Amino acid sequence: MAPATRRNAIQVILSEHRRLTSVVNGMLRVTNRMASNADSSGAMLMRAMLYYIHEFPEQIHHPKEERHLFARLRERTDELAATIEELGHQHEAGERRIQALERALTRFELEGGSALPALRAEVTAYADFYAKHQQLEETVILPGAQRYLTVADWVEIDQAFGANRDPFESLETEDDLDDLYALIVQTMPDVRS
Ligand SMILES: [Fe+2]
Ligand SMILES: [Fe+2]
Image (cartoon, protein in one colour):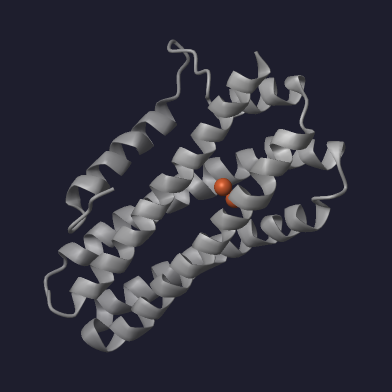
């Protein structure tokens, strides 16, 4: 029935948001420790985190939102058009911010401590930017989707987000990213999420 399907797709989106939040919080903790910890482990962990953000939210989560959730919502109502446009811009800006973060990390690796304040500023700005992005999706888009989308829309969105994933379907990329996420979480300092 539709209500169960809706809950499934939304649960997947929320859990993908939680994962990115925990990686972003991990980046904040790693940069906070870099001042006192001179070895290169923090920079290596941060590279893995940036790779994860680049490969999962940027390449999979955000395009799925745009292609399925936002596209169907646009067809059903004009009410959310401005928010959807803003979120689309934020998806593009997110990619640019991740590239800026990568550059700041490279500078830190080459120059050391003098480049740390700039790296920290980039990480803090990204964390703030991403928290607002996620909040807008969760407080405006997901409730709007529950209000306006049809059962057929939910079937498509459910499939796109793998809420009813066929266990025999090949999803190697996402599985590899699951493994990477697990590794990142294990390696993060003082992680509780
Ligand atoms: Fe998004
Ligand atoms: Fe999202």
